Length: 63
Image 1 (tube, rainbow, N blue to C red):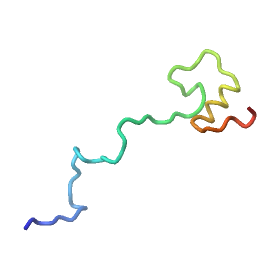
Image 2 (cartoon, helix red, strand yellow):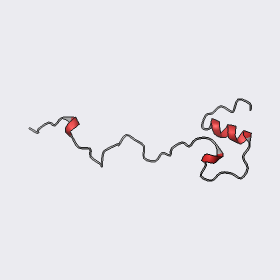
Image 3 (cartoon, helix red, strand yellow):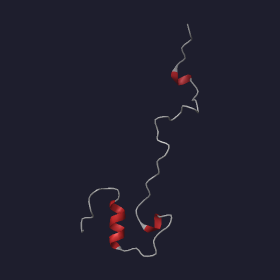
Image 4 (cartoon, one colour):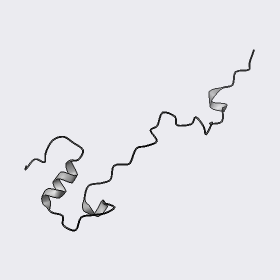
């Protein structure tokens, strides 16, 4: 018979820790050209509204 340990007393195993979390996802950046890694040279109000609505499927309200 093996000895049972209290789960709170166990040390985390780096091999299995956070297995449920995806490892290939990217964080969503805030909207706006100033938050882009490579911002476009030209950026207008429509570009801003489209960027703010992404990834939603609805177009901007004034479309």
